[in-house]
Image (cartoon, rainbow, N blue to C red; front, top):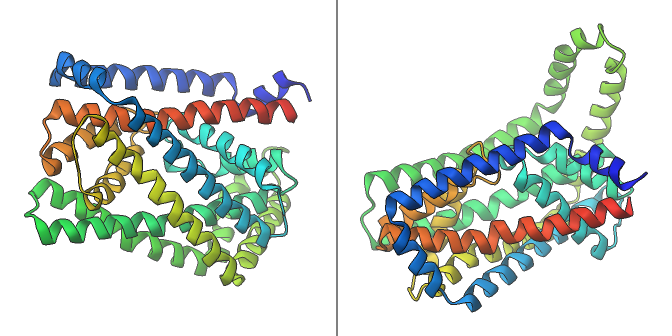
Length: 341
């Protein structure tokens, strides 16, 4: 396969246009937000920021992604694929790039990530998808653990505004709803599979591209992969430990971003703000661009006592160290994955 063919498979022209358009619109919105808050103040804050803390944030993001890749390797091992860690780290970075640049990728990029993983390893698409979904579900537990820890400390130390109470309430709903939804989905997986077959049946009757028997076989393989993973609780606990490490290093860049502008912040507050701002990543822009920055600026201003100019400056530095760094590093990894395909 040539490089051009691999690239065409990975990102088609229509998707590329959506990505470019999404970035353009998000950057315009972010510029308007900065202009409304005070562009000169933000420029001064960024010019005076200590680049060493930005570098520390980038390093923290790199470590977090490596930890999540390790969790991926553990889960893949359960379904019988022992991928060299060096290779899998590059694949994970490439998959992260695909997830971060795709509009709404944060809200449902698992099928695309599984596609990247299956192309770059010997794993089947079904096993890849099962491992990706499992790893994402494991990542939800530390997400809500950190959010709950930060929320408890905030409640004990301060009086929350009605707006922040609303954010905390949303996190609580997700904390309860996500495990319940996962448990219901697991118990009803065969029923869900039969429903999927009924939905696809009209399409299969009119085209040769999709067959009911082929889909039934894929669902059977996917279910078998999930069952193999669920039966190995030791491996799940092992992967979960790496998930916690990954989330810790994912949150730390915000702490370093605050230090970069010469301010200070409690780590417990960071543990609340990062998960809360991540909910803004569900906005229809690549990586939640503009939405996450606005949410961070608001939360930092409301809870951290920073001016909105300082809050947005911190948010921009944090996103440079987390999102932009991950996109750049992941983009290089994606090019390398394409070249070796």
